[in-house]
Every structure is written in structure tokens, then in C-alpha cells.
Image 1 (tube, rainbow, N blue to C red):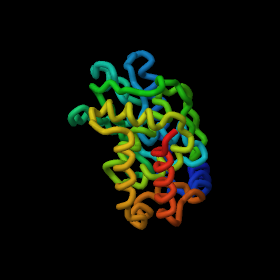
Image 2: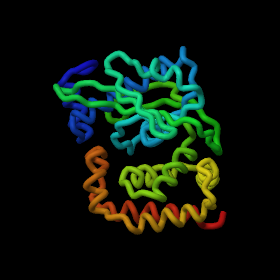
Image 3: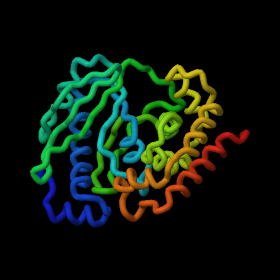
Image 4: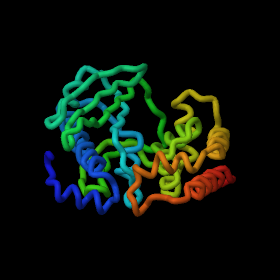
Length: 259
């Protein structure tokens, strides 16, 4: 096992209450991210981290869930993408293109089993944000690994996009992320307005939040517990997802109150 011995891996797995395969994948994910950012110092592409990995590993210290992919917005030509995802310790597979998304799989082996870190680049969309992009540290609560200086959207802007996703789908990971992130935000309602403009949606923040509340009301808590708990460290794992959904609903209702 590259970079870590089996005893250490078992200890990390036991401490987190997550399978060794997940813990090893977390190590490989940060290894892949480090390789991409290092290669990009020469390539000079304008990349910004987004999505669940960025939110959890940068802003949700102490309540992180396991995340298995890396998402970027790309504001440059795509010519050098193949170079920055050609990382030692991985077999680069792809690209696969779908609309404005380019996907690569970074393949590796764990205990004789093939696995991949998925890396996606979204192109062609200049996002409106309430805060500037910043360089922040990526920290894994699960493994203790640290990566310094990753370009990422602000907490408010990341959560606004998570909220927009939650408006149209009912994934437990989104519920978890928003539930823990909303109390840390400062300008979330403004960020939601900016996110809606970026998506060219003719909705106000209030209308979007109302739709999110309605979507939450349709969630099956037993289903999301079954699908989501495996990704959450054992000590943090909810045994009552309805309470989590209800608390998130209250958090959103507070956003709808006049300032």
C-alpha cells in the first residue's frame, strides 16, 4: 500500500469507524489533489475547487464526511488538462466530456482491488460570487493529512451552490453538508442570489429557499440514513435523520426571516 503501512491504515480506520478502503481513498484523494495543484504551478490554469470535498475538507473541520471526488471550475483553455492529471501513483483514464464537464478517473489499486479518484472540471461558466476566491488549507480529519494553499470558493458561495442542488434533489450528503455549514455562513442569502444569477435562473433567493424547504419535506429519512451513514465517521453518524432534516428546515426558515 503506497505511502502507508497496513497497521497505520487499520488504526485510522478503527478511529474513524470507516472501512479501510475509504480511509485509503481519502489518502489517495489528497495525493491526487496535491499532484494536480503542483503540476498546475507550471501549467498556469485558472482552477477553483468546489463541491463536497472542498466544503468538507476546508470548511467543516470536526464534522467532515468521507468524500471521494474532486471538483473544479476551470476558467482557462483545456489544452493542458491531461498534463496536470498525469500523476505518479495513478493511471489516468479519460477524458470523458459531457456538455461543459470534463471528467478523468485516476486509477489505483487497494488490496488487489481497482479503485479510482474521480476528477471533474466544469468549463465555460463565469460564476458570480459574494466573496473572492481564496487559497485555503485542505485538512482531512480522517487521516490527518494537510495540503496547503488550494484555490477555493468562499464558504458562503460553496454552501449557496449546495443549497441550489438541494432544491432539486434529496441526497443525504447535501443535507449533511448544509446542516453543518449554514451556521458558519455570513452572507448566505446574498450568495444564493448570486448563484441563481450564475445559473441564469429567474428565481429570487426567497423562492429558491421555499422550494428547498418543500423538497426537504419529501425526504425519506430511512432512505438517506441507509445511503449516507456509511460515508460519515461512526462517532458523528446520526441515528435519527428526521431530526437532522427538521433542523436544516428550521435553519432555512431563519434565512427567510426579515433582517
